[in-house]
Length: 96
Image (tube, rainbow, N blue to C red; front, side):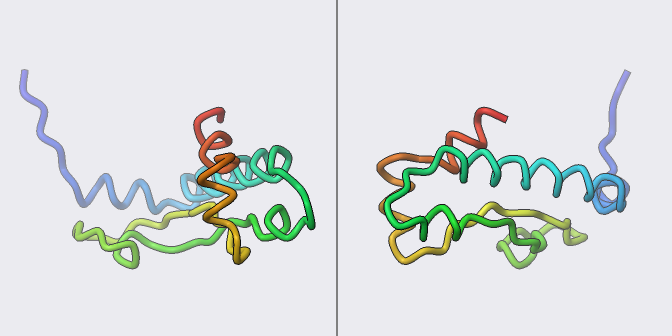
């Protein structure tokens, strides 16, 4: 038995509204867990955690059809320091 992967059909499936809704729901769950576990001094970092929708071409991928993607982002000025030392988004993603 041989299996042949047909990329365009897979991309079409990944872009279906039902699949995109599930992916967005998962990303929102990660953002919620990250906010709940983020260290808080001023609340700026915690408040900056959100989900952004983009597509794979904007992220530098080169497949035939752009896939919808959701990224959990913290855009406070000190977000990279907080993520490097405490990893709230990274931990939330791996504990999902």
